[in-house]
Length: 271
Image (cartoon, rainbow, N blue to C red):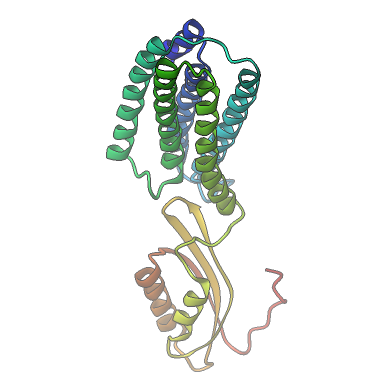
């Protein structure tokens, strides 16, 4: 990070300085992700009955927001350079960017080997920070090559904007997923209609209502519902079948199921 920052000042390269700023956010984001895992490991309390698992999602949301800010800063700086492109030392710029690329690829490799970058939103947001930074280094190398070969100094801000757009694309995916979880949206891998039909297939179940499926944190889903059963049905047997089917078919272990018969009356549910 320091090498790219001072190298960017020396070579007057926006691509290097924007990559350095992105690396600074990477360090903060990785630290935040690490803190999120520490918080998530804390036990539940009387005031936090679900524990601190959601802190991972909040960390992912913050990281995504930080990527938006960084991309906006890069685009703003690039605008000024499009109007008045400075002369840039392309050779030195390429050498410094190559070192930055090696550092980022090593970080990305460590995350993919030691973490779940596909299913854990917190790790994925940290991984995208590092990957976006690696793209910044590639862009800086490409810009330096173009300037050395053709003397076209618009390449520096142009490559910076392209990298910023790639960062925004990645950040948007993480942001949408984090907001969806915080809004108690159903997991994308689970079809609530299929869940309802699976429960209705149990002998003795007449109706399924007040069905909710949501994500507590990455890889941890939860379900609650009401089952209306026959008045002469074995409630404990039906409940056991429902729990078993939800766990087997949908991989959901945290279930809360209320068994009801025709004599039970409750107020109309709002959600």
